[in-house]
Amino acid sequence: MQKMMTNHRLLSVIIFICLLASCAPQPVTLPTVIPSALPTVAPAPIEQPLPTPTESPSLPVVEPTLPALPPEPQRIEFVTEDNVPLVGYYYPAAVNPAPVVVLMHWAEGDQTDWLDVGMVTWLQNRGTNLQEREVQKTFDTPFPFKMMDSNRSFAVFTFDFRGYGESGFSGDWSKYILDAKAAYRTAASLEGVDPDQVIGIGASIGADAVVDACENCLAALSLSPGDYLGVPYADAVGQMEKAGKTTMCVAAETDMTAYYRCKDLSGEHFVKQIYPSGGHAMRLFRQELNLDPPVDDILYQFLDAVVSW
Image (tube, rainbow, N blue to C red; front, side):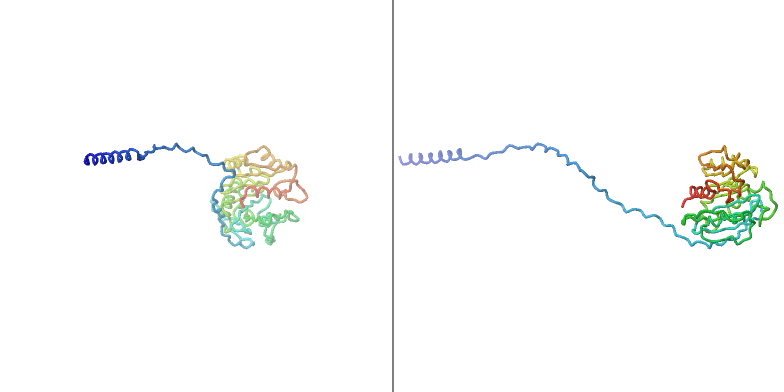
């Protein structure tokens, strides 16, 4: 009996333990939640653009300034391709290096006419009087050139064609182109000159020579050209046009030879000034003519247009 009760209690304990086990909370396995992709949010528009990084500005290259040469003329002896000795004068500019203007005289005078008219000192723009050499007085007084801007100063080279002034041999107009070529080359080689800025200005025979001989020149202005050297002025201007070089013709209607050389010419790089009257070549500088516009205005505008300062 006692044994039966013991077994009954044991069975009761076992049943109770089993009941506890079945009633105990079971571990819960949570479902795996895969989060959905988050929506893409566009950035707010930028009302002002972001500043870009600034680079240090490149400083201009400063060319070393060379001291200006003295203003007094330098006598230059040079030789042409056919071995003819010529004489010229170099008048340095107030800056170094400087553009150089090669002045070629007319048949009625020589290189001193450019001094007489006052053009050399005007181009130099150095406030000096260089009319100390003996000159033939074509003009009673120098032409009243207007003062040039203070930052403008040209070197000037004048010379005598063969058979004129200080140059030797006889005057052979067919050879003047050789003289002009030698003058251009000599001017470009002078100390204080920018060889890339050689400009020719000539009168009459010089008006033809400045374009006929323009191999290394930048531009040329002709005062009363006339086909005097055996090359038609129109052909010479055409060669300048092909090379992209500026040519200007200045003439008066009363100077028929020059007028008919200039009046019908045109081109992208060709300009002209035709006066109703005024005479030939250097006579355009006579004060009493009161040309409108004055010759010095024409010269200055031409030089300022072709030269790089």
